[in-house]
Length: 226
Image (cartoon, rainbow, N blue to C red):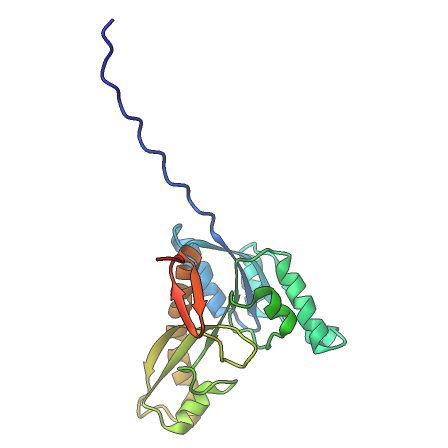
């Protein structure tokens, strides 16, 4: 019997990397958390899944959003621990239980300490409503207005042992208008938050899909060696 020509087997599909595991920390209503939930739900290729949401207080809207989405939650309050260091260790342990690839501080209003950074330094992402290194701290919007800047914005950065001093991942610019006054700070803050949500979603997705490396103060998004 005459043998027919060899037929090449189709190439095996490339293995699909599992989604990056995210633990999201919140203190308030959870609008940044919701932006991440929406991005993950809308795009199967986003590259991440939220495996837990933690808060530093009871009754947060962020935890309620997570519970509605069926995501495990936990609360770790400073007042329940003898010292701030003990709280920091407890928070690190609770987060570690969920084996995150990345921790996202999404409106989390506590400064983490040495124990947390020893476990998750270089992979904890935070947002700030100003263009760092200008106007760090709790009143970035107010301080920018008081200084008279013509543009401000938001920053997504990695957390280090300072206050809003970690390596910058991405920044978005928001124009300051003549109508933006210290008394009308809330309106500017809302415009910043809109940009912040989009910027956070984009940055977390890129880190989840493509990885990152930090060289000094510079953050490179993409696979190491590219």
